[in-house]
Image (cartoon, rainbow, N blue to C red):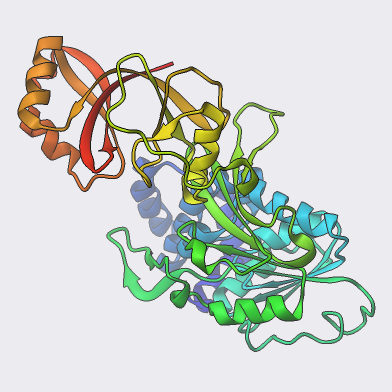
Length: 416
């Protein structure tokens, strides 16, 4: 989005038209646009408000009812922090006794909103002029927030204790570096993501400089963060919900609760506490199984946050089991144990992954459809389905395709 479009949306006409739109429906958007243009509205304004209506509908999953009064860009919404995670970030800053936080690269303002909601002053810095304009709108109800249009590097170092007029106020910093490559888009037109620290903007070196200058610093990074890149003494927390890893947050100084790698699994049941897995819970890499599991043994699949954090050893320790092969994550054990950060299956059959052998076994069992779970193999599941020649008329079976030792394995399983 350019600055002119942002200003168009914030004009009296733009805001009135956006507020008057019906709830967004993909199938009705084209006709609605035609009707608005026929009614005399400028084509650029119609396109802008319909885009906002679509983005607001998408944003409700991340930001709940707050989305209805906000303005977005597609890339900004993709990177915006979910409301529940922003609240967790803000609580960590408040628990450390901070009164003022520099949000360097504030984007559309989700984290600044959460920080201000807990009573902290926020200086929100954003380099993109259109995004900064939208952030100012999104944060308009929070008088303790000041939005500054500038590059994070140009806004650094801050004045004494963060800003003039606030002597002695404990200062913290939050960074959410852009992880997209300008000029490169995917099939949906979204800017391509980068998982490399070298591709961050502001740079990884700048993030570390801020952390050196302001001990209470946090940064939101890609879940693909390499463990070798984690600075000594920091906390790297991978957070997931419903099996999706949402972020990796890195914490310095007084914001650290548990140094090292941490997996945080947000549970769906209302009021249920988060499940935290730390390096102290893990026995390192843990043991590896001697071969294929036996029918009747239990297979455990760790949450993806545990996998990203490299804490599968916590699962082998909790179950007394062994990982099928280092790096695949699947753990086999002879006994059933309730593990809050893993799903449990019972193995009904296990064999080497050989197409002819598997095809014959599936036919003998009357299986016509497969639900395939795959990890640790460079294999096309759809191509395998074609090779197995299932007719779709028999029973459905859940199977795990992975490695047992160094060999590809086929496991038939049932959830328990």
